[in-house]
Length: 324
Image (cartoon, rainbow, N blue to C red; front, side, top):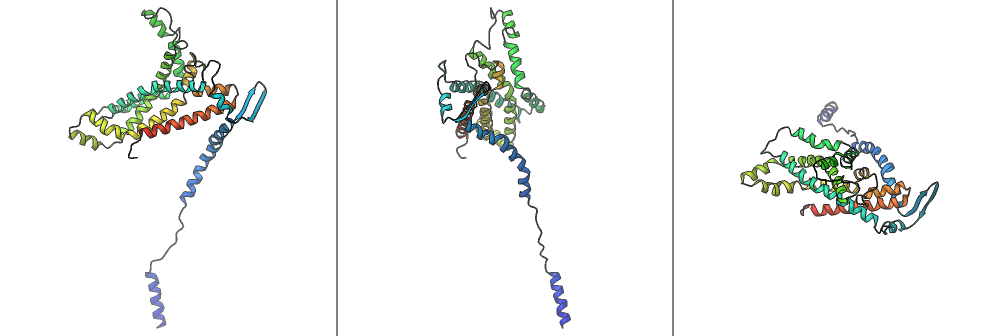
């Protein structure tokens, strides 16, 4: 009997499912390990300089020759000086902000309009255009060219001895060379806006094309079957569903516009001429850095950070959909 019981016990143990405890791999741990280098670089080269810049903005810290003054706590003295009128009766930070926004708007308005038209045109299922990849490459190609090269090119074209002036005199449009760069504020601003438009409209076009191609094609087909016109389809389907991409492109363009520096700097040799009409916020920041005035440069950087964050938030709130 004992043998029979022992055999049955062994058989019952064999038929029961064996519970195996497997030790899983902690993928979360390895994920944290892989992102450690990014955070180390961010802390050392981004966050730490940002904190130091914020501290410098409240200190009097500059160099004069071989003498170093500071850092000495100055409370809001740098900000008061920044918003005080200069000898020419102009508050330079306000002037620089106004110039930056004017030149950005002059280029951005045409950039968004033309990019949106091109994106709709090249993604139209009715037209079914061929070689769209080729056109994407052509649109994006100016973005690959350095802004400094564009600035030197426009300077060579529009200076007093450049081909534009020579052509204008040959055609009888002008009796003498026209100084487009150092005499007329709006001509210089127009040149800067034109260069920014040429540099960035291709990137905007490709982003908008990607956004339109991500919209379900059945929506367009249903609208056409219901007899909707092309304008109705664009304003009632394409534009509302493209709004997230438009918000992203607009905010990134605004941030890039507020950081405008290389094109106006090289075109005007860093002077912001004529009469500081092309002086941008970053050019003003660089002016203080060149003078080794780290306290005032820090104040300009903090003001630029506040303006960028405030305007970006305002644009996002104004454009986002109500149901979000």
